[in-house]
Image (cartoon, rainbow, N blue to C red; front, side, top):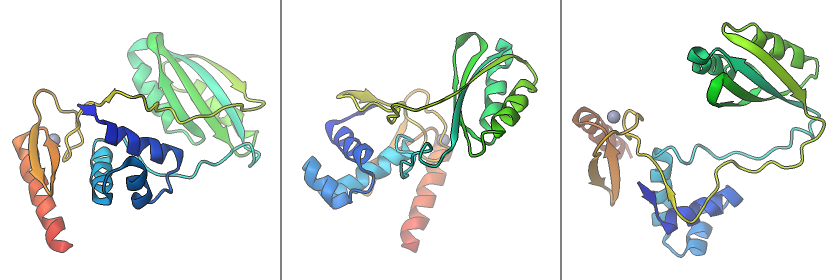
Length: 199
Ligand SMILES: [Zn+2]
């Protein structure tokens, strides 16, 4: 599914300043406020907008950031990465080819670096762990790049699973909703109706 100019323009506004009001975004993008609101609901349903948060500086809070370069036994790479993702202090986990996992972590007390290291090294199927403590951070930008042309894969609005093949598209309240199967469609329409009745 392609994102159109309006979607991308709204996302650009929000990535710059998530505190912008819908009214201000509408003015900047050149559409109505209800359009911005409907588009944002869809972009959230699609899992593109994951939330709105303040950007804090861990360095100003004297926190310690470090990187782990982990090598796992390939059939277990995803399991190892998931276990690492659950550890306290771990902020980002990237899985690469060949059992390689790159981990970004931040701890309040620098002595906790060793605790995280020990836990990772102790995981089953971890072959090697290398670590580097950052002495300064120079740049940190949001990872999503809002290019002029963007596509997304559709997820089912009901079960949040990926939609394989042709989605079931239903139009309610002036916008499209996508479902993976007829049972999800039924549940979703029912939930939507209940929400509307309650409002
Ligand atoms: Zn579904």
